[in-house]
Image (cartoon, rainbow, N blue to C red; front, side, top):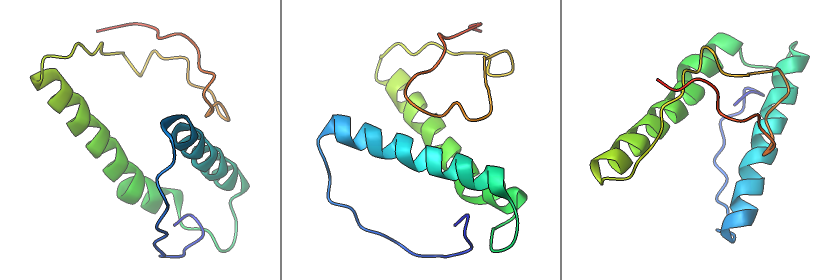
Length: 99
């Protein structure tokens, strides 16, 4: 979608570690694409108001369902989190300030 192309790609499920790696590769590709800007790219506003907001909504719903099921999930203050441009891989800083 960042390239203004609406296409669906079915993927064969992989073992869990490979699926995790696939997600990080996709996030790294999106991060690199957003850093480019220019012709042939969807606006950042449209991307964040559409598919990225939808993904964040679904993530929140999954967290809520896990909490309802009795699983403990720690909340983190994302405003105070150590967020850096280009830091999208599996190696992340330790969680910061909890609520």
